[in-house]
Amino acid sequence: MSSALKKDFLRIATVNVNGLRAAYKKGMGEWLEPREVDILCLQEVRAPDDIVRKLIGEGWHILHAEAEDKGRAGVAIASRLEPTETRVGIGDDYFATAGRWVEADYAFQNGGGVNTTLTVVSAYVHSGEVDTPKQVDKYRFLDVMVKRLPELSKHSDHALVVGDLNVGHTELDIKNWKGNTKRAGFLPEERAYFDRFFGDEIGWRDVHRGLAGTVSGPYTWWSQRGKAFDTDTGWRIDYHMATPALADAAVAAVVDRAASWDTRFSDHAPLVVDYRL
Image 1 (cartoon, rainbow, N blue to C red):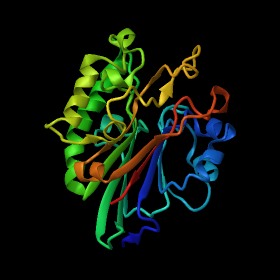
Image 2 (cartoon, rainbow, N blue to C red):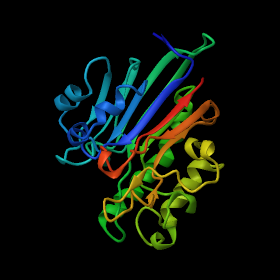
Image 3 (cartoon, one colour):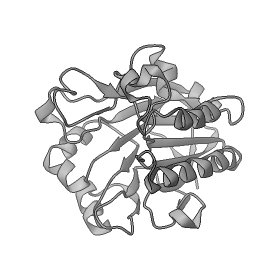
Image 4 (tube, rainbow, N blue to C red):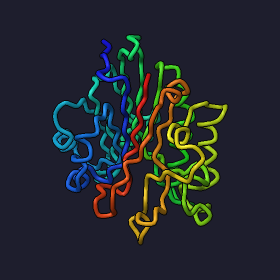
């Protein structure tokens, strides 16, 4: 059954919370309450399901996948709209209990009264580490994404993958890119996957980059070390990746960067995009 949107756009936010319990202690609830988010996607939740539901509160439909390794990963989608179907996992049994991929399908009437289907994914790609099994897992996960994205394109009218994808695609996405070309997160082999995601082969779009244009950043993550946040020495590794028609419907993208280092609730900032379907 489709739901009618109460406003003429759909607001979708994603944020790596770096532990949901810690984020709420640091003010995440105060950020979320006035933000009028319709679909909220979270990564690095790192909390049991009952705690997640208690913290997010009433009025949300919550899909949450914990990682088998306690205190690691975990992804969730909280939505005001009730999903018609949900799925946990990216389709490779190797990652079945990794807590890194959840999908929710929605059916609703857009502003013109037309029934529309949308699939939203909250994804958390491995950070990786050069020449270690962590990097092998990262490449395996990205390989499965190459297969899954075209399937999602066929599954719904619109598809959207959001989350902490742990790769800066271009030199615009990392302040100090020259010093990171041999580090996980900006390796040529990793960036090549994003060339495929956003190129002719798969044909999805980088929504935030499309709206921001050819500017440095806007960054979504800053190291906890030194003065990275104060000097805006950041990385743009949190994405909205959309099928073309959905990307065309995006009208605004905002990084909700905290006013100061000590007022952040995570080392990532929320990326909020409005879609007028």
